[in-house]
Amino acid sequence: MTGNSSVSPRDELPVRDELRGKSPYGAPQLDVPVRLNTNENPYPLPEPLVERITERVREAARGLNRYPDRDAVELRTRLAEYLTRTGGHRVGVENVWAANGSNEVIQQLLQTFGGPGRTAIGFEPSYSMHGLIARGTGTGWLSGPRNEDFTIDLAAAEKAIAEHRPDVVFVTTPNNPTGTAVPPATVTALYDAAQAAKPSMVIVDEAYIEFSHGASLLPLIEGRPNLVVSRTMSKAFGAAGLRLGYLAAHPAVVDAVQLVRLPYHLSAVTQATALAALEHTDTLLKYVEQLKSERDRLVAELRATGYEVTESDANFVQFGRFADAHAVWQRILDRGVLVRDNGVPGWLRVTAGTPEENDAFLDAVRGLKKEQSA
Ligand SMILES: Cc1ncc(COP(=O)(O)O)c(C=O)c1O
Image 1 (spheres, rainbow, N blue to C red):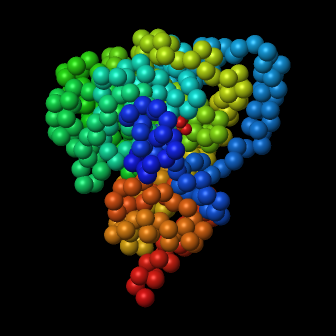
Image 2: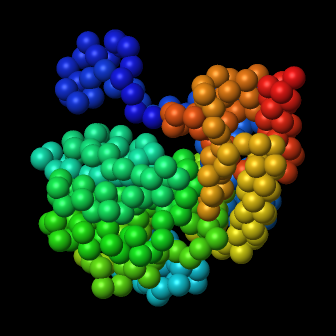
Image 3: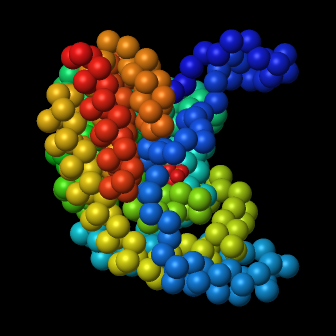
């Protein structure tokens, strides 16, 4: 989470005032047997895909003396095909833009539509990078409310939008770290509220949508020129190391982000690797089915063990409640399992791993319950 750290040598430098004393994003990267803390896909890429990546990258390597395709046309065409096939709405290359992870997509959107003198709102707890990227781009950050069950409090959200008239509204569905999905009617109501307050952009962050029980909100871009759906290959495609995110929106949005994107931002190696992964979409999506059933097993087993669990549409589960969540995080870590303390009071988050990893996690948390009742 964002935070105010103790004084660091970097604060001796003439850094921007709004960055002074702040902490960078930093999920712990610890060397422990079971790592279930960053919502990665636990399955390594299948060998035939590794072979195909090697082939495509070898081909790309022969042309590395040249800059890559600045507009990444082939890649955007294949991403548009994937979205059309799975997202319930027909999109073309003109609707799609890609960057180095959806974090960079979000950064480009905030550079374009946020910035100094402008504000963005998110409904927290949510993905902490939205606020951090806002800060990095000089965009003011507003924290909107949620209900006790972590759903968006629509009436309060509409009120906050009317009052603060933000330039950018973030809706994360399924939401990280809670796992909760946002109904389409809530998103359209927030969109209408945002347009009534001032013409502002609504960014629907669908990083985890492939794991959802429900459908993508991609069809909502139709007739809503200020609505953007942001996606990633880091989760469902099992390619967090690739760094490939993308968006779908009205072609004018794709055109607008050209104003801020760095020239040749997406390397030829990245484009080649992503294209290879997209050739293997069907195989990769089979892992998603496995992870969804493991997610459902985690929910059921945690509840059976006596924990509270938030409804999850993602590849992770939020569980609690704890008087001291950080102390519990440490005790689970002592048993060799790394989960995530997102700073949500009373709750921790565990990513769905392989069945063996999930068994190790469940053994750890059952052990804690036994200790408590002993
Ligand atoms: C909601 C959400 N959006 C975006 C991202 C960033 O993903 P990427 O790896 O594409 O930058 C994450 C990563 O955890 C996320 O949880």
